Length: 210
Ligand code: GRF
Image (cartoon, rainbow, N blue to C red; front, side, top):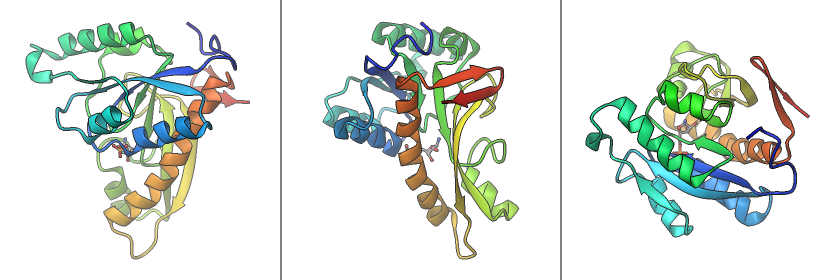
């Protein structure tokens, strides 16, 4: 499947992987409900049994699955299981939304250029965990969020879109995270809608949006 096969006609089929609260999942679901995103979330998968994202999925009538890492003998087995489930759900794209496990090579190759992540910094600054704390500790005056394709590295894949927010003198991790999150909730659905319209192309590491 290429990125443009669904074209402008069909709804984008999305699988969301989430480990936690799922506010980005909620933003995606709301954009779909409001008609600003022509998509369908065909499944939400979590590696955490009590992830609030699973409750949000259930409430929205979306298939939700907890895939228990403790039941798999190793990471590769977990990846195979995910691949199998995602293969059955047949999404155009896999959206990571606060998914805390690193995906393995096999999964990334299986869905090449079809896995998207949102990260709470202006990459390549502050990859990995606690990006907001990293930004505060570094003393930057501007940070933000990034939606990018996922490759084998940690938050290193081709950048699709970014939004900047100011870092204010009185900020702590909570206030900065909240300011970034407001932008995340707009940016993620917008990028997905561009994908639905076939307006995003990758050339090497560069992403060109029409
Ligand atoms: C967001 O800040 C996102 O950028 C990061 O993890 C957080 C997930 O939040 N990858 P939520 O679970 O979507 O509320």
